[in-house]
Image 1 (tube, rainbow, N blue to C red):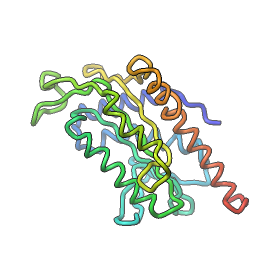
Image 2 (image 1 turned 120 degrees about the horizontal axis):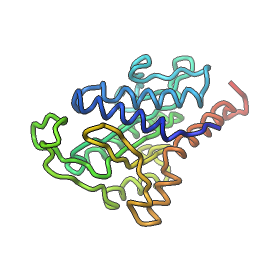
Image 3 (image 1 turned 30 degrees about the vertical axis):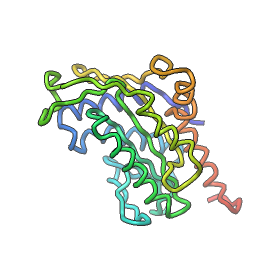
Image 4 (image 1 turned 90 degrees about the horizontal axis):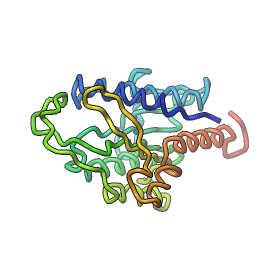
Length: 236
């Protein structure tokens, strides 16, 4: 079984955050280190028989969704056929202003892929617990341009929790993780936060177990084992 190393995860987040501060929020460069980390972790899980696409590793794989074609953040393929998809959301600023858009877009892109049937879509959501709200036209690399700090509250997470435990439908991600982090504006170092220091015990327990990044990769590994057995009991 894969052993999740939080230090490696934090390193990829720090590298992505550093590129975000250097190149800005619209640059794809800010996504590459984090996506490569997920891709490398999936490669350990799936093995050499499977090819995994992402930024920096063959580019994003285009999946012909139910309603529209979509370039997927990370796609596991077998003989160039997509068999597992992962979306990564790393929200670095102005979360509350765009909270509903983030949530609705996540459900929409998940439904577009999972409506195809037999193509699971996992979602990894990373949020800054203390999220800066940058002033309009800010450069994103100057702390003096931070208008205010917004705290990710329980109410901000409620809709994601409800989605995760909803009945199985196309818009509900097959697997999901939510990770709260802190990011140093000067050193660009990112640290994963314990939910027990942020929220009440019941919510913290969910975030630390069922919705943890560790469980996220364990569930993907379980699906991989199921896939290799095949529905007919045959191995690929």
